[in-house]
Amino acid sequence: MNNTENNKDWLFEITPKNNFFSLNFKEIWQYRDLLLLFVKRDVITVYKQTVLGPLWYLIQPLFTSVTFTIIFNNVAGINTGTIPPFLFNLAGVTVWNYFTACLTGTSDTFKANANIFGKVYFPRIITPLSVVISNLIKFGIQFFIFVFFYIFYYIKGANLTLNGLVVFFPILIAFMGILGLALGMLISSMVTKYRDLSHLIGFGIQLLMYLSAVMYPMELIKDKLPQFGWLVSYNPLAYIIETSRYLLLSTGNISVLGLLYTLVITIVLFLIGLLVFNKTEKSFIDTV
Image 1 (cartoon, rainbow, N blue to C red):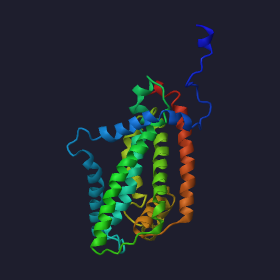
Image 2 (tube, one colour; image 1 turned 90 degrees about the vertical axis):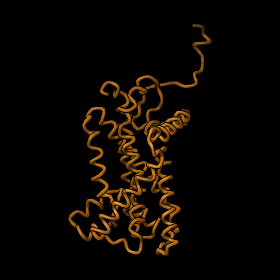
Image 3 (spheres, rainbow, N blue to C red; image 1 turned 45 degrees about the vertical axis):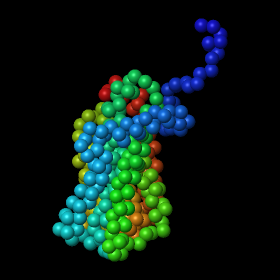
Image 4 (tube, one colour; image 1 turned 120 degrees about the horizontal axis):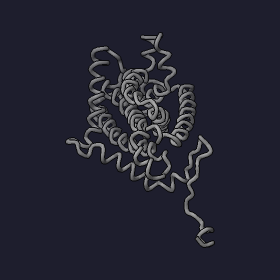
């Protein structure tokens, strides 16, 4: 090897991470084509061989909202004020679905991509990031359905008022995506050692949904079941969903302290998730 080859300037240099909190945005940008490829894969291949295809994006929130309306509003008698119960539930379900899609999609990162990770290098964080972005597209489709029914009920004469603060709604969705990413990175790291954890995710998400004010106002649980109200009050997801309904339907209220609490929890969980994720990626191939 001559001196010219020895002094060659490399385009990329792969080195071990010295910082557990490392999040190299420059490197992620260099691999943006791969990120977009993963996003395309997540969007297209999931329902590629199904009969209804992308229609499942629409069926799931509609079916869930109808079920909640029958059980919680018609049978249990939960009052949604002047807001049609179905629209009330659809708003909560649409936002909640984005979180669950991000969480479940990222919680199996290491196990599902072990073959790829073991053969070629790229920033591992790209894989869970692609899930968050691809699910944002699915959220957009489901949100379109919410807008359709909002217009439908408005034409029918429902007392609906568009809140001027709705311009901040994308920030709440970003919170949801980051929370799903953070928890997903934590779970995916633990799944490499504790395989049984993957079987508990579905049950845990169902339980968390009932504690996140998806199908009821936050004030209701505090009034009817004060002994369990603290569980909802300490759940950052509940504040996001409650605020989302306020922005979209002008119902409920905004808790500034609750949103600040949510912001702090989101940042802390993301840093912890990134720490555990970066630590796990160095040795996960030996345990998967």
